[in-house]
Amino acid sequence: MRHQIFHHDASVFYVHKTPTAQGWDLKIRLRCSPEAPIERAAIRTLVDGEPYFAWGERLDSQTVGASGQWWEVSVSTQVKTFAYRWLIGLKGDEWLWLNGEGVWEHTVPDHADFRAQLDGSAPHEHLCSSVYQIFPDRFARSAQTEVRGLPEWSTGWLNPDPAQWNDDAAQTKLFGGDLWGIIDHLDYIQDLGFDTVYTTPFFEARSSHRYDAHSFEHVDADLGGDEALIALVDACHQRGMRFLGDLTTNHTGVTHEWFREAVANPDSAERGFYFFDETGDYAKWLGVETLPKLNYNSAELRHRMFGPSGVVQKYLKPPFNMDGWRIDVANMTGRFGQSDLYESVASELRAAVRAAGEDKVLVAEHAHDFALDIRGETFHGAMNYSGFTRPVWEWVTGVGERTPIFMGSPVPVRPQTGENFVDTTEDFSAQMTWNVRAASFNLVTSHDTARLMDIAGDSQRARVALALCYTLPGVPMILYGEEYGLASVGDYNCRVPIPWEDVEHQAIDNRELLRVLGGLRKSGSALPSGSLRWVQVSEDVVVFMREHQEQTILVCLSRCGDNPVTIDDEFFPGRAPDTVPLGALSLDNGKPVASLDQGIAVAVWNGAQ
Image (cartoon, rainbow, N blue to C red; front, side, top):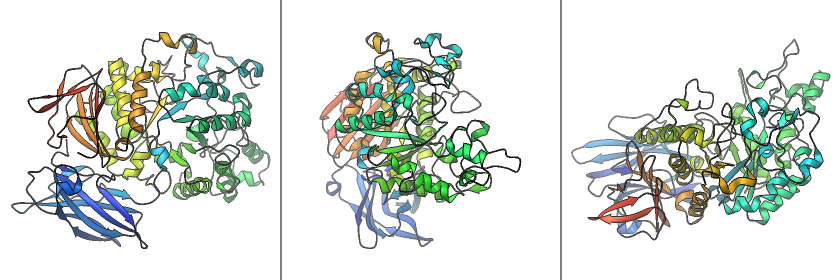
């Protein structure tokens, strides 16, 4: 644990901003142990590239409305992202630094400074959302599936029983799910507490995953066509839900109309959309022959992708009216060898999304440390595989030698302690803005990973992983079927269908847990935008607080066993919680004790404490 006496992050609990004609006036606060021997406190930042120190003053805790010793620095700035760290002076002329990675006695560099993003935040609706991810072909068939029949490129129907798949789950075989099938189950999805549906690609393609786009002009007829997407988004909006699509800006399929024209006509504009060498060979995504890589040195390609009538805006505007995009392999888009156009391409992509509406959201797929690529001015956030998914896997895994490989790693996931879990999440988060962290997907599984029970091995560890998705900073994204603990088949093929005719007889049922967690996110501001304070951590137990001026939430999680947890926290609220949605909370000789329900206890107080 690196934060025990001093507490700060760049959330609204500690950073208060007021817009001015020139920029922003900031009040930045530090919370400390009441007994901490602090004599002075300042923030160190850069002004026009030169170090600058702004000294603070001590505040009365009653003024703040929360317990502890408080210090506040007032400063004005014109930058969009304000980077800083604390310099804390103790009695006896001792000085400490506090940054996103912890407390230090020695001088530290700037890389882990706190970052307050003052402009370009994600839409409020996104920050408060709970996302249900669907792989359309495998989710639910509709009455139209049998009417349509198989497309000419498919090699057959999948066996309805995934246990019989073996090698039958090839990319050219179909289960038959479509967008109409999703509409049929929207009430079910909403009843689970989800308010956003995100599907993998819906464009015409030549595979079940559809990341090999045949065209961006229309929705695949085998998913119901344009009519089905318009109806699906409209049905979501009628229920107060949102819908996110999935777009490949890095590559197309080899059957795409652009690529076919590029091959047929070397003098065409489309030839410049791809990387061809003198032999006629072309650049491919990770060497996959069917996925030619796009070349954003072409102004015409940028226009067709990002222009007013381009692909990005087309589906965010009427008649489709989608609420945002998840961008496939966003970290690779615009990058090939010595050509690195990532920043300009990402900026144009964000501008296109913004042009379609300020309430639209843009999330990047990014499988490693994304702090340098995503700073809030391009993508609102990312799929947080490195700073959330992997450390959660490492803490909750309980399958021994059967632990799956993680996202291309050469070795299986290795079990880690609670302390290492916390340190890993904080290390990855230290270099990103708080807004980016809050807008990024907290996911434990996706269509590209093993399923949760493949990793956790038992229902309690799986429940704890799901609880982390909802309660740590970020937007929970849950893969369809995790409500029943569906297992992968074969070599961790996670793209299995939900057994709709037998859902009431599944061995695992997380539906009520998801309802409670989804309701908790909607109950106030602590989870969407509140601060994070680690209270205590051991090998098997983590306890943390999410704190906001309007709400305080305590979360206690144990990956194994339900032994009561005595909580030692000098900032603990001095009264009983207003609600305890999961588990129970009592006092024993003045000390709070959490009684866990299958590894989880959550308590809620109204207001700051």
